[in-house]
Structure formats: structure tokens, C-alpha cells
Length: 331
Image 1 (tube, rainbow, N blue to C red):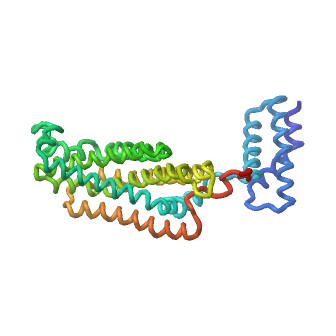
Image 2 (tube, rainbow, N blue to C red):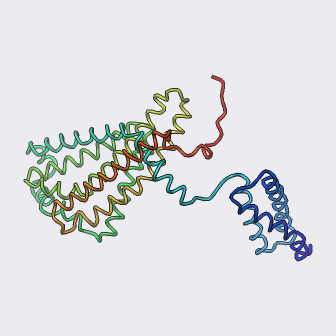
């Protein structure tokens, strides 16, 4: 096959297809022309690949065909509009809809942590069973505070973010089973209460709260949100309501996945606070104030943008055009 003659014969078709693929809107005739040219050029691409494979021409035609396929099927590349919609509509709507679940997880965890902390601080025999006197003294006088300044801030922030993201991911991934989420919450609250109780038993509760509150408010809230999303996912198949279990799991699962993506940013922020603010020389009130501001900003975000989005009918699920087709089934 004379490749130059083949290119000369079809160059105008390729240019026209590229032009139509780049338009934002097409009328009926142009849409039909787009589909017809797409099929024709796809065939021509096959001919070129088999009869006269030229890498540059194959790459060029493959790009044209790929863009035409995207235009014909209605798919689109991720854009800043999609990112903006996620953080202003989908993510806050999902957070607001699950507020009772993560609110309950927050309340239960805080009560458990306080109970464990009081129990440890009030019973010397419990402290002795947990660690020796020297180990407790080492924790109180050195290890707890040194933990926040042991590594370079950037490395520490990455380490904290990875660990917390893993905990949040576990809560959502195992949410459909229910019990693993409760176990993660119990373990997390018990550990916080244990360390707090040991610090309080040595008269260093002020140091404990001064170091844990700046980042812990937002960090723990993110963990509670992940746990709430996981528990809601579990409840979706226990009590799907008017939906089928498959529909309930699909809708809540997609919303939970969106929450997981959004929490990546929230946990990155809390990790930055833990790495750069918690060990800083700022006075305690200033460090805690930064943590309170971050937590207040997050809650304001949820209860304003989230409430407004839910009032407009948003659920945190993906947009209808990418959910896939749903066919009625016989009951």
C-alpha cells in the first residue's frame, strides 16, 4: 500500500473528526457525522496497523480515534470542575448525611477514653500491670514529648498521614462487616485513654492535652468520620429500607469511597499540624487554638456546605450519568 497516497486520500476525514471531537456541543447532524467518521477512521487505523505500520501515523490516528470515542460516548477527562464539585457538594453532603453515625462514634470513643484514663490514673495496680515504674517515668518525662520531635517535620507528617489514612481506610473497607469497625474504635480509644491515664497519674495531664489537642481534634474526628461511614455501610445491607440490598450497598459504598478520598486531604492537614505545630515553641494556648480553629473550620464546612447540598437532594453519591444503567426487576 502506498502510505503517502493513503494519507493524502483520508487527511480531510481525519481533520474533520478531530475538529468535531474538540467541540463542546454538537447538533444532531454533527453528532451523526462524528459517529460515522469515528467508525470509518477506526477502520482506517486498523488498515494502517496491518498493511503499512508507521509508528508516527499509528500514534496520531490512535489519538484521534480515542478522542472521538470519548466524545461519542459522552465520557470526559477529569477537570477542575469535577474536583471543585466534589469538595463543595459531594464530599460535604456525604459527611452531613452520615453525621449521626460518626457523631455516635465520636461520643462513644470519648466516653471510653475518659473511662479508661480515669481507671488507669486512679488504680496504681493497673499502672503496675501495664508497665514498670521506670517505664512509666520514661514515658512521662521523655518519650511522649520526644515522639513529636524525633523526626524531621516533613518526614513525620508523611508518617502520621500514612498511619492515619490506613486506620481510616480500615474503618471503611471493613465497614460492611460492622464488628471490625467497632474493634478499631475500641482499640484507638483505649490506647488514648491508657496513655492519658499514665500521664495524669504522674501529674502531667497538662502536657498530655497540650500535645494531643492541637492535631488530635481534627485527626480523631477524621477517624470517627471514617468509622461512621463504615457503620452506615454495614447498616445499608442490614436494613436497606425501600432499596434492594444491592442498591443500598452500591449507593452507600460509592458515598463511603468519596468520604475516603476527601479524608485524605483532612488527614494531610492534621498530619501537618502534628508535625509543624504540636512540637513548635508556640505557647500551649496558641497550639491548642490552632487545633480548635482547624476543627471548627471542618465542622462549619460540614454543617453549612453539607446541609445545603443535602437540602438540594445531594447524597454524596456520584452523578447519575456515571452510575450505570439500572433495570427494573420482578419483585
